[in-house]
Image 1 (cartoon, one colour):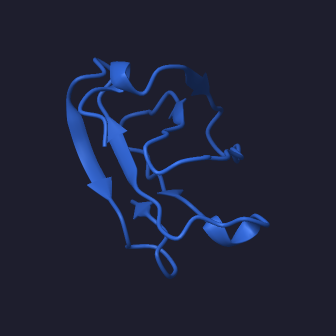
Image 2 (image 1 turned 120 degrees about the vertical axis):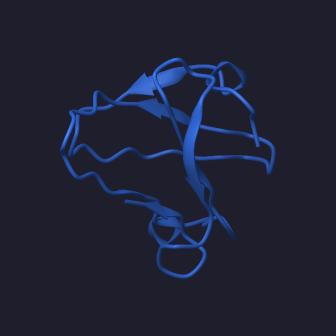
Image 3 (image 1 turned 60 degrees about the vertical axis):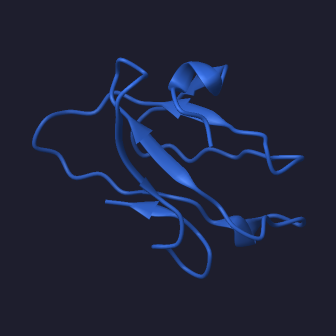
Length: 87
């Protein structure tokens, strides 16, 4: 797991409500996505590894503050099966 967003590398921008499709080829590869969050709004960030022909056995999510160094929360298995979910 990366310890800062800078270690993830290329951060792809998302619009709230937009789904992202990613593909990882090894256990030590990470995809990074960013979005603009508004105060007092409720967000759900989740993975669904069942949607691919070559699903991951497990997924992990980390939500970082905009400084890229402060981890706010992380999750591994709060979603369906071994999927990650942050609310």
